[in-house]
Length: 191
Length: 143
Image (cartoon, rainbow over all chains, first blue to last red; front, side):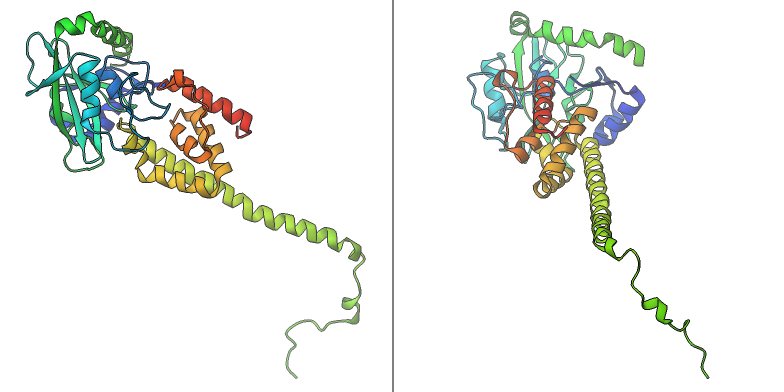
């Protein structure tokens, strides 16, 4: 596991260059860089593996779900299938916070899915793991969209939601809380 | 009378040198020097090119989660191209970089070597995948 602690100022500067929309909104960094997981795992409240639906041992994909040939573009449907059947989400229309529900956002561009973000349990923003870079908490899924550079995240193409009850009974909320609390000391010291 | 361009040759200049027998040995030394002169800059240039591309790739794709986007980056493609031509050297660079800088070259390594040292139960576990590749590299003699 490779964890890189860089200064908040350095990270904010670099990430704002990559995601220009962050420059005008409120957001914060909530973890160091970590290669152990990426956004899909973090949307699923996991921090121990890199998730991707390719048939390659570099990536984990839940057993029983379709894996795609290595190198192929990944359609939204691959993620919808897993987040519906494995985590109890269902499609919904808007990203606004609804009391009693937690949401995830799926981003895609012409190459297929690029990113996922998970809504904070109490609606205090959206949690995104930016590749190998830091986790951030941002106010809206639109903060990471980029229509200019085709190699970036593209647009939010789907929002899904599940009830708090499912989140609690599947223990996923406890897993993500534990992962967040691991970095409490980091945040206190560095920021 | 015009001034001569150089000192006139004397008959003694044409005499056979005393170390004439060492000539083959000298030729070998020249061959070695030429080979070294050509190979040393090439090696360092290749490694330098690799480092430049690796750092650029890291800098420009660290925020991306999609492995497809990361692999399509021009620097990643450049490294794969270098690996197709200088496989042994580039595999060594990739493994050393993975060991020292923790950059994820596992897909490039499997592409170049056609090897999969990763156990299915370790799928997605970055630390174990790195260990598997580094152990393979030691057996392969690349690190």
